[in-house]
Image (cartoon, rainbow, N blue to C red; front, side, top):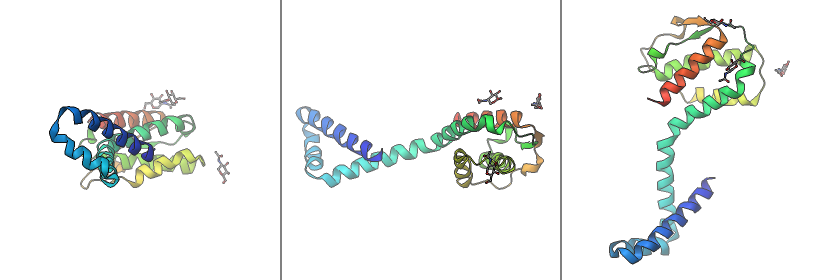
Length: 164
Ligand SMILES: *[C@@H]1O[C@H](CO)[C@@H](O)[C@H](O)[C@H]1NC(C)=O
Ligand SMILES: *[C@@H]1O[C@H](CO)[C@@H](O)[C@H](O)[C@H]1NC(C)=O
Ligand SMILES: *[C@@H]1O[C@H](CO)[C@@H](O)[C@H](O)[C@H]1NC(C)=O
């Protein structure tokens, strides 16, 4: 995928350069430089890619989790555990702490229900990347809810974070 995108960017860059060459004198030198030097092309592609990745990664992680939860939904719904459920109001100041509370509860359900599905990997990865804020309420302070309310609140929370 990365290789494909790099190739695509190089092609796009060359096409753009080619067209500019006829129009703007100023850009000819940059175009010649990068066309004659594959390393420069690679560096440019790499920089653009890094930039794109940095800009979109935070959002797509949430999207990935939402997809992952949807796939696990029917399996998770079988649990009859009561789970600590954070309200939406805590998301703004304590985003990662709230998400950590949700992940800890979900992982507990996965262990309790002995869900061996590799689809649960995404929850562990997501959990590992969290950096819970200090000074936030402890998970045990939140009200206990059944799994369907818990999953609905988690989905709402993720959608709220996505729109923040
Ligand atoms: C999850 O499953 C429950 C019950 O089976 C259903 O009511 C709910 O709409 C499902 N949620 C999603 C996001 O698919
Ligand atoms: C998961 O694996 C355990 C043993 O490794 C097994 O007892 C259990 O039935 C499996 N659960 C599911 C949902 O397949
Ligand atoms: C889960 O809890 C909500 C409200 O707390 C309730 O309305 C709903 O009936 C409960 N669902 C199940 C399956 O117990």
